[in-house]
Length: 328
Image (cartoon, rainbow, N blue to C red; front, side):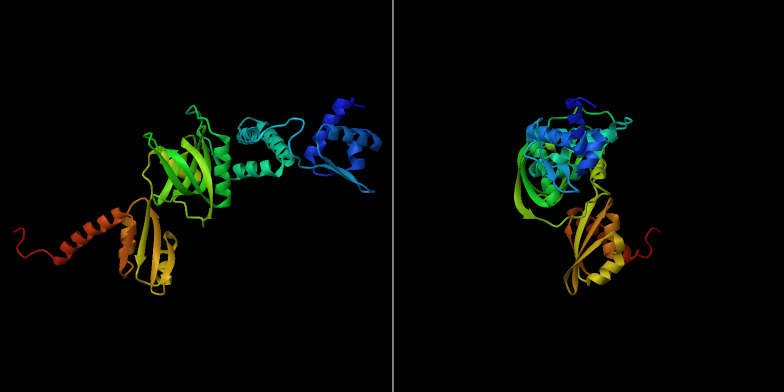
């Protein structure tokens, strides 16, 4: 029979691995009597582990969520740091490390109190990891910033915060947060900037004092395959996709049938709709709008209005024809 300390650790490991153990089965796994198992359970409780017991013929034991992680008591910031570290290790290419990290993370989250578990699970769910290999030295992130932003992403809640732009100019931002992206030892928030009316990426090391607003929002279509692809495109210096919005004097169904999956159509009135398109070049939206056979007004961007004015002038000259004798 193993000594008491070793057996207690083995018991704790079994309880953290399996949500519920029948008493006889648990005693059999430890190689002890049911009476000895009860004493070992009492010893765990004395150490602060909240072990619940179900009495009766089919009685057993399970480890419940507690107010802390006894006897290893950690605070909120340490719990977040632990979850982030284990999540990163779970994505490791080193053989054996990923599987072990997932097991440990599952055990720790299982016995966390609801308050900490909610923060950690939101962080895990709302983060898109990206591996670009060795790169920048990384930056320090306030764990409170990380979890407040992650919760806003998960709950679809508008967020306000202070942000220092690349040139060092601070300002207040109001956004609809979409996802967090962990890339090359930095963290980025992908969000729709309400003040600028467009999608943006925000480095979390430049973000301060995030505040929940309580205002919910409907998800918007991201102009990329996913949040990670959007951040890659921004950091690689590729031009950002153009987001086009136009009011079209035609029924929504007619416009929807014309543009197909290349645009999103919202009904405005029975005879007017709002068309949204995303494109790398403005040429295609210009051609699509021109081929609708209906009057339209470009709401955004102003560059498309300038392009249409240039096309209109050239088309007008082409439509006027060439004077007889010109070029002779």
